[in-house]
Length: 205
View (cartoon, helix red, strand yellow):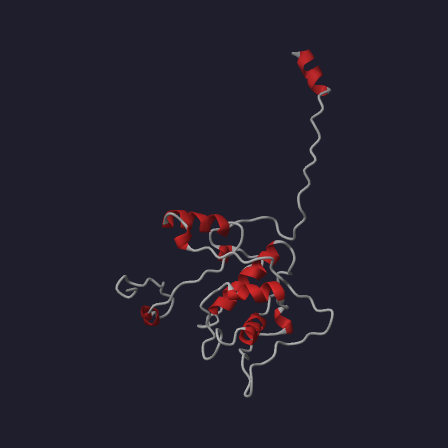
């Protein structure tokens, strides 16, 4: 028994070379990111028509914050995205609601032009002028802009079943908040307060 402890005294464990990737936030993952208190998820904005812009910008900002590339107190400009979309796709994004039919249209702006911080172009809903479509704002150099590499759009129809689709969503949701698109039917206008949108089969025909 004594010799056993003597042998262990001279035992040297193998060195470990794992070096954690530096990040501002300690990794935490949620099914519901509302409980996160680190400033990753921003306040809720309700605006019919530009909800696609709000969701995309907020999701992009959350990804940047998780990676330590955007300070927790900062936001990205929603106004910038809608103005750029209005300028480059005037026949797709137009008043009075500024909705879009294809979310992937926003990929061109986010990849090619990027977004500035919210304080550089605050949300005033100024997407039009009295004479013509407003030109995208010009910024003094150097101005920090944020770009995406690609946008991945996941649809339920791309999966064998809704169960696999939902499992994929939950897996991605553990990594960061997601932006989603929900098709609207006339029954959406019947919602009041904080009710969940659950269209009937009849309304979807």
